Amino acid sequence: MMQLHTCLWNDVDAFSFCENDFLAIKAHFPDLVIKIHPNVEAFLSQAQLADFLLTWDFEEVWYDACSSLKIILTPAAGDGWVFPDPHNKIKLFHGTFHGQMLAESLLSAMLFMNHNMPAMIRNHQAKKWDRNHQGSSRLLGNQHVLIVGLGKIGSSCASLIQQTGAEVIGIRRNPGRDPDGNIDVRSLDELDGLLPWADHVVLLLPGAPDTDRLMNTDRLALMKTGSYIYNFGRGNSLATIDLLKSLPHLGGAFLDVTDEEPLHPDSPLWDSDKVMITPHSSCIYDEYKSLFINEVIDHLKQYLS
Amino acid sequence: MMQLHTCLWNDVDAFSFCENDFLAIKAHFPDLVIKIHPNVEAFLSQAQLADFLLTWDFEEVWYDACSSLKIILTPAAGDGWVFPDPHNKIKLFHGTFHGQMLAESLLSAMLFMNHNMPAMIRNHQAKKWDRNHQGSSRLLGNQHVLIVGLGKIGSSCASLIQQTGAEVIGIRRNPGRDPDGNIDVRSLDELDGLLPWADHVVLLLPGAPDTDRLMNTDRLALMKTGSYIYNFGRGNSLATIDLLKSLPHLGGAFLDVTDEEPLHPDSPLWDSDKVMITPHSSCIYDEYKSLFINEVIDHLKQYLS
Image 1 (cartoon, chains in turn green, yellow):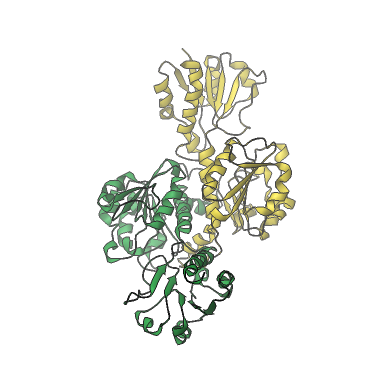
Image 2 (spheres, rainbow over the protein chains, first blue to last red):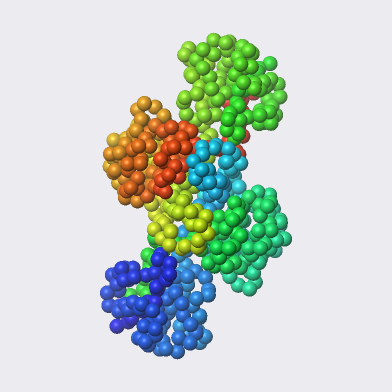
């Protein structure tokens, strides 16, 4: 009998899996043995029994203990927590289910900035009925959106944003074809030329040395007066110091990731009226765990049906 | 030469028209005389010269002074400020351009509530990086939305919300056919049966005696635990006292209109963590005036081309 082992506890409740979360797997594969480990030591003591592993992290040296392991599935969309097998025998699959969640979070952020919601909330807190805070609000459907880092997730975002009527252009290092075929995709060379065109600039870049401060002060200066910037990728692409320098001519920034996480209470980012920060929560949804489990079931079908 | 007179000043900057706003009319109809009145007295002193009138308000007795008047165009979508001609000779046209603006404002409000933004903002203000405020956030695309009062504006809202994947049902006194043909429209008799189905209940009802407290405590009690209510129609359909009684079992309320406007600073609505209030601003956009002017040009073409 094959064994599925799991190490999926997490500080974030929405990302911490418990027994009930695995019932759908059990229903699909009644003969599969499912072992839920409370910590990595418990897993490592039985690692040689695992055929399949669901985990948030994995270190290089652990591979030696996993003689039966065929695949590792991790919910995270990006690299960083699971070290790939140096012998390239055990396959690693990252979650690919984040698109719809990120798309709704990003659309929410764009409408939030367009409607000047930080000012509306201060207004509400002051119990004021003031109808002159939103006079310069613009319709997203009439605007231009530039997505920098258009992978699979960016494509989901672009598709949803296009439904409002907005014009969307995506930037990718290797433009090739858009995975969904209906987004206008350009190369990184065209970024500087497109920045003055956009009303909203969205960073969805992976964390890597070559994306460090990709959105630097020169590029921020190219953005249109009053336009908005969003970082929903990784914090390294937009440095706090660069953003603060550039804020005066921008409409504002909505940051779901920052160059330091968790963001320290002393960061001047918290104090700016033009900045809204969410704590890397763009994929924190009630649906997160079931979306991952559905993907796990699809993978297991290749071994167990 | 025909004359267009305008009385379109307003306390809300976004609704107050000035000379520049009429340039597009002048460009289309160079021979048309355009008179911009600073107040109603100025208009009334020349009322007999007006062939067309753009106005925010009009009283019954003024019709006697308007011997040449053919049509009155008012930006407001709803009744209340322009009294129709008792002799039914001078036609009155309300603005019909509000759909896209209201749709984006409503979508913004729904995503705002789904993402627990009031808590996220308090979190931001406290400079806290807490990732456990959004764990019960749900994807709008997986939810059910009930729009109570599905006219032309409601149809625009439904069309946009459907793009997320959400299921939308509209309620109308006389169901007939949906103006756009792709929304499931039901009669008012079905309202009580559908309230427990909806994750989001949107009121878009006109202000009239027969909509007074239409969403009463009995109906609020039928709403699903944790679901959200929105009022983007007129304040009379949802009384503050009824909402406050029902809030404990609801997820929250987003009110763009209230039963008293402007809402008094002493209203207990301001104090609830579950309520977000905007000051009847769902159509306050930079685009408002040009959308109305485009509609005016279309009307004038029937007389002047």
